[in-house]
Image (cartoon, rainbow, N blue to C red; front, side, top):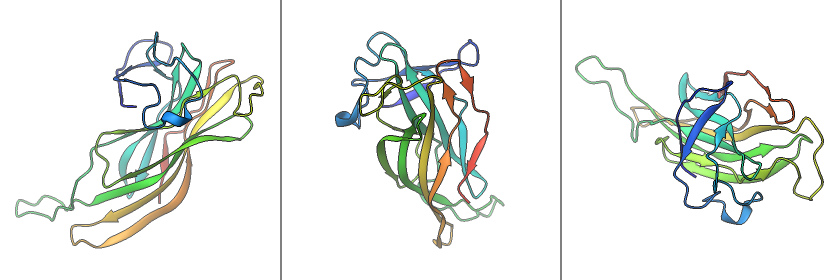
Length: 199
């Protein structure tokens, strides 16, 4: 699901525009909320958390929500990173490393249940999106109703490899668990963390 953020007015809510052909594209067998995006655009319902590695922002982790299907999902909007390492040039520019990212993205439910997951692997952050399956905010995977406050948060288990301009490789973090900011749908509560550090 490729979603470009479009900032709009609202009580801390940012509108998102979606170029969706099928809700949950990339996770077709795992979509748990149906009719998503048929009559509403997705909105951002958590403050984004910057995913950092070696003082570089690789992307942002957040929750999205479709009002028409009452569906919540986790998403990472990756920044554009170098497709290959770059050595310092004669003009005094600094060396540029490249990063390889892989891991698992999912939404955590209010009962600390890890919901359906999406695995990802990128040779370098490229401005794309990684999106989890869309989950109904009222019922868990077993069909049991959630109670208030309907709390969800995005989670990622992240591994980051760095290749410097000398083509030397290192692992900055391996399967590091990073939580995004939570949102409670019953009362509109928000988490306020700013970043998750891979190191």
